[in-house]
Each structure stands twice: as C-alpha cells, then as structure tokens.
Length: 269
View 1 (spheres, rainbow, N blue to C red):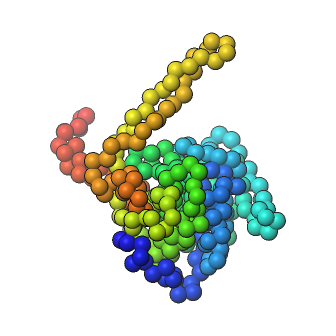
View 2: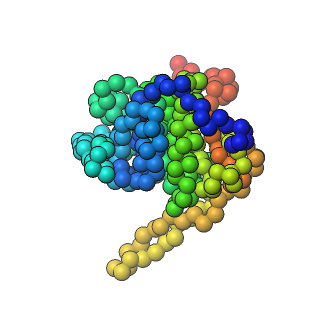
C-alpha cells in the first residue's frame, strides 16, 4: 500500500476512543509521549507504563512481590501512572483495577529498535499488546528501526490512523498488530506492507570476559541482522524502507499438527 493512497484525514467521524498507552521503555520515554500527543488530539487517553525501562522482559508478570503505582505529572499538566512492574503487569493492572472502563484500544510503544522476527518472543513492547488482546481489546505494538529515532511524530500519526482503522474495522479475536517503522521521513518510505513474522535466528554469540577480580561473566552480542528468505517477512519489509504491519495470534497451537499427533496412539491405558 503506497503511503500516498492513504486518506490522512480519515478517522472515526468524530467518534472518540478510550485509548490506553503503555511501553517497555519507562514512563518518561519519548516514544510513549509522542503517541500521547497524537492520540490526545482526538481521543481520551490514559497512560499506565513501567516506572523504569523493562526491555526484553517478554510476557513476564509479577507474582511474588507487590505492585506499586505512582501518579506522576509530565509538563506540569498531564497525569500518568507509573507501575514498578513489567509491561504485561501494567496492562493487566490497568484493565482489572486502575481504569474506570474498558479501553477501546491499547497501544504499546513507540519502541526505539525494531521488534521483528524471533524478537517478538522477547519483547516487552509486544507482550503488552498481547496482554490486551488476551482480554479481547484491539491492540498494537509499535516500534521504530533505530535506537535513536528521529521521526517519532510521523510514526505516532500513522499509528493513530492504524489504531482508528483497527478499532473501526475490528480485528479477529485473539489477533493484534505488530507495527514497525523505518526511521525515515515520510517521503522516503516505500509504503505499508502487510507482512508475516520471520523465524530466522540472529547471528549472535556471548563475549566471555573477566571482571577486575578475575570472575568470568558473559555479555550477549549481536552484530548483524538475519538474512531473510522472503520479501514479505517483517524484517525484510522493514529493511526495504517500508512500514511492516504483522497480524499476530495469541493462540500458539500448531493446529496443522493436531491430527498427526493424535495418530501417535499415546493412550497409557
């Protein structure tokens, strides 16, 4: 889909959504507040996010310690709720305790650094969207392919339009969207592509080191991206300067294998 074909004025004909924003980079992260400024133009927005960075924590939740919530004011006027837990904690706590009503849309991000391929399994950004989806709420995880993004406002604007479309058209039950932007000005992007998750592993390794007391420790290293086999894989789409939009299912059952496994005759009687 070419960006020039999108009706940038399209919305919900004046209908306001209740939007919950979260992330895994902490409540003061620039990407989160870029989303707030954009969605707050048209919709009712609440922010519930980790009090500090919680990147790569996956879908972990807190079971053996209490969760504490602190109200903070940003720019002296905007109230947000900081939680000393994971991104999934933030969404679960917001839905079950903190919000007066169920949101229409949950958006997690904008994360600095792409979340594509196998990294969806580790990402706290993606986990927050998945948690909302498990509760039957339209949800999106949003990232930019740079650790020092320059184009947050335009990514936030396109995210709002995609969010309005997701809410207006509806997503299938148990499906949320994983969206990744190239860190490019709009005129240099080569469209929006509906993509699929790549499954190649990254060429990574551990650097073995010693501390000043000669104790061994390990530092994980990844110096390159995987080689993608198909043009419609999320990482390949992103690398080609296009916005990647991937529908992700919460149900991880391999339904194609059910019949074969039932033929294994695993009866223990």
